[in-house]
Length: 570
Image (cartoon, rainbow, N blue to C red; front, side):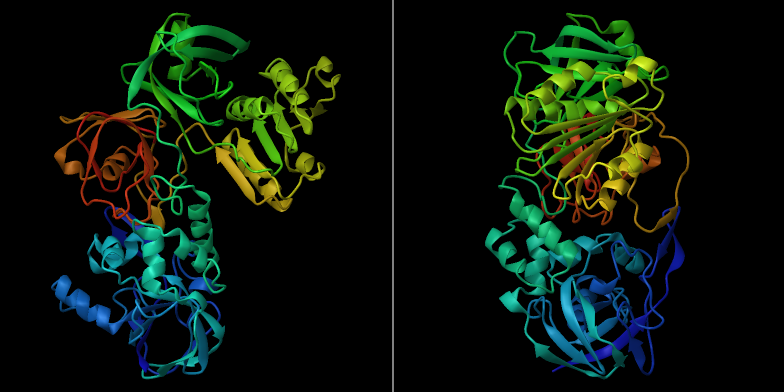
């Protein structure tokens, strides 16, 4: 019979880490006497980041005395005491390779149920001063696990832990952890795991994404996976034609210099062009994805270096080094209704999707919802209208925030494309939505679509993605900045900066942080794939090696160092 050795609690606090302030509840300490275990946590306990820890599905974290002994030997430490791994229950028994998801136990006056393995983030390494620990917990098959509370009650050190029900399908904690984080991803086991009602919704979503991917490289349970790029690095493409869509929107048609057909792209992907030394920009494909050439369309911003360069140099016959089409903002191939929602130049990737739908004469409902300032600024209006006319079930809604008198004659609406407009459209909740435009517009539209019951919403933005730095309260402020260095040049394409590598930088993630480039991470040791980033050109070495390699054409920047000059989609 297993025993509750220690009950550990701790409220979130701010700690200093690598020049930043982190808000975390990973510091837990033993409690004497009885403690009330409630639906979301123990009395006196809390979590600093509810997105990754805590909540009903992760009310209690469990770790085993046997694992303490194991890590004391492996890490050669004699200072590990209950709560050191951030757990609430330190137990004698309940090993990860025997406990199954869905198992239920009575502990003192409470009944609990196993919901998932521990989420391995950097904070357990921060707590113990072992940055490698998130990866080690997975690689050594000792993650620990979470419980949800079925019946509230008092618990205390010394309580027996009695199993009262077996989890269906016999998916152990170790097997569930390996299924998501380690290579292999056995599809039959994933399908069985999805039958376990107790498995947390987040874990189920990851396993469904894994099963939806037909196979190949990468880990779709942790990061969206695109097909590998059609060619490595950059190759020259020639401008075959230039078209001014509006006064400030320019379209370029690009072709192979020898006239051979270019590889088909996925509708919604983008191209990255090296316009000049040190000037790298990405632009969405806006034409037919499977055509013999590529079309990109660019907003010529007055202060944008890329737009200024194209205004002065984009001529038929000019050649730009170009990376292969990339991106995971791609068109769903199911039979669900499609919502294409954009503002301004955000129409470009959705226009490629519309070309794809029209080319296949897709018969599912398609909604084209677009906002612009007025008819003069409305790029692609006639092209979109013609494409929609070829689809058997298409609707078009156009909104002009500052229309001219003639702009409203064709049925366009006055005002912005906003929540009020979307609420009045009776949009199908089963639809898959694609949203592109300014950040504020996308936030408002996402909120409105969610309120309308649309759950499957995909967003694309042209600038650097918002940072994901869980728990970090303060970090270096200011815009991204370039930096000289003696080693390979690393270009962060979305952020428009280039940095020379030095041996002291450590990893590409650390270099990006030094240059104030917005970054996305969680484990920092090659487990979670949150930092998976497009590698547009160049070669890297990884140290440590990630537990599960990323998809082709991408890199986990928390592990990687440059071997050559690099261009990253970051």
